[in-house]
Length: 234
Image (cartoon, rainbow, N blue to C red):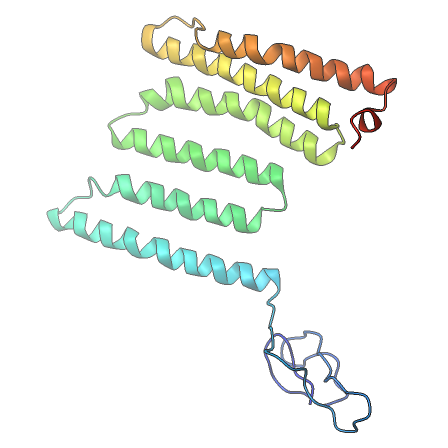
């Protein structure tokens, strides 16, 4: 008799859809010259739909992350107040949120990136608040995340929604990395000495800016007159 590949229940020969779970039913393999059908040789592979598999993985990760969180909190509460456990609970909570993003937003890169930026901001803000304030996050970590998101989010949207080409896409990625390094260097110097003066980022700027200009020139000028794939035999 045929069986359901999802819940493995046997059904009648005329049934094409499982009445229990609604999955398509696989028919038995009938060999030529034999009147009696038999099942295919070898072990039966039951493949779960991505929605069910994703839910089971998330449930397992939730249990794995909740157990150490509760244990650490209970141990810390033996003294009557939660102090050091916050340094463990906040990263565990952010790890749980990160796993949820990668399981449920993997096919939507822009939403995944935005969610990851929010989770990272919450992690840094929470750890800074455990130390006694949010001065480090407000003056350095927060602006650095904003500078990172200002080029990564538009770049992710551009790569997903538009056909930018390998030269043009690489050029814009290098330009975003260069600008982020300059902004991060100035934020660090502002945080240390109250003077936003770029130092090491100038080396990055000198190294990557000519490559960026060359790739943009290749995309906007050379490709219009030369078949690069034929030229490089690819």
